[in-house]
Structures are given as structure tokens and as C-alpha cells.
Image (cartoon, rainbow, N blue to C red):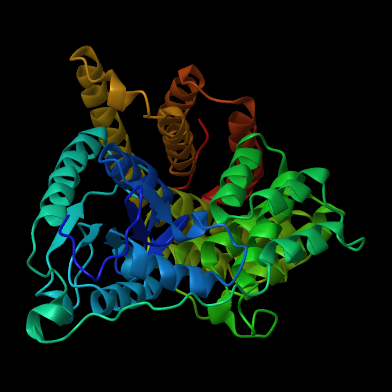
Length: 487
């Protein structure tokens, strides 16, 4: 890397990564992108293989102002990689700051379905392919190679990669003369939160003060969710929200822009799954959390579908038909924004459940709900077929890669999520076939699902919804044309 007065000596050299964290919605496509996988699989291993320390904002120890720490990283870093996927406004802002502070050593990347704004047409952007919840390992290998070569090139060339200094060549980079004093200690706030007698927190939350980073909290929170330890997950994500909001003067106000969607979504999920202090109370608490994300207007499919899930459960727990109406409203929005299996299968189910209620009393309305539900199911069957083919294709390619000696990459590939998706594809198809009167296909698909790797709760979840659906078709199936028959 060129030695000049715009770079501070740093040993070892340091790379700061500008990007969001957690799962975020790409509003242009409606897809959910797991940015943590982008960071951990595509970026960090490559940076560290080049001998650089790699850090993202959520990995900064919050011993003082996060804004101060972030600006310091943008100035001091020998290399900055900016991932602008999902049109993250914070990432754009920080990228602009870096381009203003430094002539060179900035790399811009994004997911390949992102539509670049006009003003970025003159900036070189290296793209990668994200599948949403996962990344194909052929793509991992390809992009790691591309990024590695890009890093080597950027660290060696002397020409500016900042458009600011390219178009204003006489501009001189700023020089940092003095360090600003450290500001308030966020770790203290975490300790105070954990120790508050009004907050029933497990002792594990106290350990946050020794490692007060969002990355630590998120990783531990996700691990707790995987272990179905929902009370601990709730506490960890509550602490993460405290850290995220600690530097915002308006964090406790109604200014929804201060909330991070991923953290609130995970906290809401852990909250209603914890069933504390009781199930109904936890559902209402989760709904209030989601309302912080501008629930009435947001186009974030994850937020909207979570709200639908909460309202659906409130209806199932006998809290009134209005919750069913609310659930349909949210699932309609989420299905309109993103036609996926989960949104579709639940929307169809809820239309059928409305037939049993007094929300619409006319025969015509009940016929409409039965017909529309099955129209959605026809679409869901198409999505199931596409999803199944995509997963099996990835698994076959990965198996061939493993046989070819690429186990180093594939050892990081977690197939558990793929296995879960394959099981739910089968049971989603089974539910569709049953409602469409294709009983033999239903029976066959259920048997195929049973043979797939799955946890017991997954079959229980399917059987519960199916048990709620059966009586509707046995009572109202005659409204369809031709009439629905079970045999």
C-alpha cells in the first residue's frame, strides 16, 4: 500500500466494512437478505487471509460514542469495503464520508440484483449473488477469488478510487491532528439495564458488559433461538436494542427511524415465543414492538408477516375475529410484496378460516374466500416446485464439489436450513393438494415429507394447521365448483 500522509500508521493493517447487519429486506425485490452471511462467508475470510484485521460496526467495542468510533474507523482504516446491498442509507452515507476523507483504498460491492442509482454509475461496484437466506458455495468460491484479487490491486495502485479526488485532483485530504475525548460508556448502560429489578433478565446478560458489541449479542441471541431458549434470546436482543439506541437522543421517542428493523423483528419473535409472563401478554408485547417499525406503512415483508403471525395466533387463542381480519390484512400485504411459500400458504389458510366466522355472512363472500384461497394455493404449488429444484440443484453441486476436494469451503456450508426448507416445501404442497381436492397427491406428499430429515416440532406445526383446515373443507367444500370431496 502506498505510504503517504493521508494514512495513519496501523499495525496490523485494518479493514473497516461498511454494511448493515442481520437480515434486511431488499425493498426493490421484497427479498430478505442475510447480511451476516455475506460478511462471514464472502468478506471477512478474504480480508483476514490478506493479513488485515477485519471489523464491522457491530463488532466495535462500545466503550464510548459509536458515532465517534465509526468516523475514526472510516478515517484510520487502511482499507474500507462498502456493501451497499438493500440500498442501506447508512452505508451510502458512510461510503460518502470515506470517499471524502481518503483518496484511495475503498472497495464497493453489492448483491447483483441491486439497481444502482445514477450517481453511482461512475463508481466500480463488484457484485455477488445472494440467494436471500443462503449463498451458493460456487458463488462463495467465485466471489472470494474476485474480492481477493480486488484487494491486492487496490492496496497497490496509487490512483484515487474516490470519485471526490478523481474529479477534484487539487483537493487535499484532511489530517487528523488530535483525538477527541471518549464519551459516555455504553457498557455501563447495559449493566444498569441488566441489573434493573424491573427487568427479569437471566444472569447471562451481565456478561454483555465484558464484550458490549452488537455482533456478540446477535450471535448469542441467534444461538439461543436455535436452541429454542426464547427467554434468553429475548434478553439478549433487548440488550442489543439498548446498545443500538444508546447513542440516539430520540431512542425513546416515537421517531421510528431510530429503530433497527432486524433487531426489533428478532426481539418481537423471541418475545412471543417466550410466552412470558403468559402467551397472550407476550403476543400483545410483540405487536407493540413491531409497531415501532411503522407497521401501518412499512413495505418490509418480514415486519408485516411477523405481525400477521402474531395476529393469527391471537385469533387462534380466542381473542376475537378482529385479529383474524388483521392477520389477513398483513399476510395480503406481505404476499403482494413477496410471493413466497410462507406468505401464500398462510394467506390461503386464513381465507378459509374466515369462511367459518361472521366477518362476511353472505354465501357469495364465503364462496369468494374459498375460491381465492385455492387460487393462491395454485401459485404456491408453482413456488414449491421452483424452490425444490433450486435447493436440490445446490445440494447436487455441493456434493460434486466435495468429491472434487473442495471440502474446505463446503465445511462451512450448513445444510440444516436447506433440510428444513425441503420439509416445509413438501408439507406446504400436501396442504395445497388437500384443499384442491387432490387427495391422492396429498397422501403421497405427506409420506414423502415424513421420510425427510426434520425435527418433531416441524411435523407438529403442519399437523396442527391441517387439523384446523380439515373441518372447513368438510363443512364448506360444497361451495367450490366442482364441489370438494375428500375421497
